Image (cartoon, rainbow, N blue to C red; front, side, top):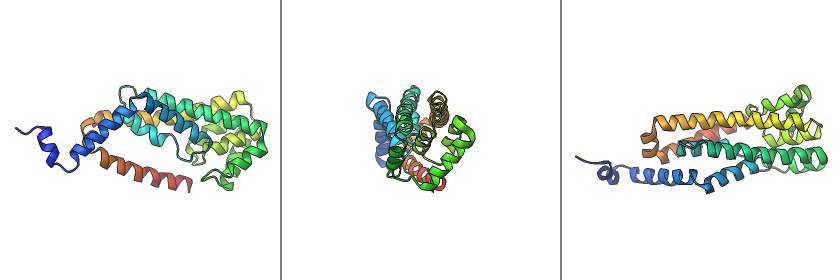
Length: 207
């Protein structure tokens, strides 16, 4: 009877898919992976345009038993970056807006929309942000510049963004657990599909 190892050399990219998934699983379960997730989240909250969820979902899918580690790193990193940028907006609003306008994929229309929401809703507007398609950094600067209370704004944006991250991480973990063998055997194909679908959806939301 042929084993999986006997079939692997003759199955298109099966060996490569398994090797790639095993490498990713080791990275997602390591301190390096957690640090990468934290750094990505800090960067996205300040200057980097791609949301942490893009990296978080495949990390949660690979590190299924301890998916809470990359999730916690993502939430903490986003919180740290968000607090720094919010306080920048509080203490130097003009400078914060000048810097913000140099950040990739930030537009004047987004700044105006975030300002409208925060003026209308106050700190509760931060629960809208994760689903708005407007980068968080815009909301952070706007909230600080508007003088929103940090004691209300910071918990609101940490909780709002954290709930979205927890949703995607949990979904990725559950799906990867249900189809563990399929995910490993077709990891390279699934990764390519994931990148295309994510960036298409991201372009639709933010464009």
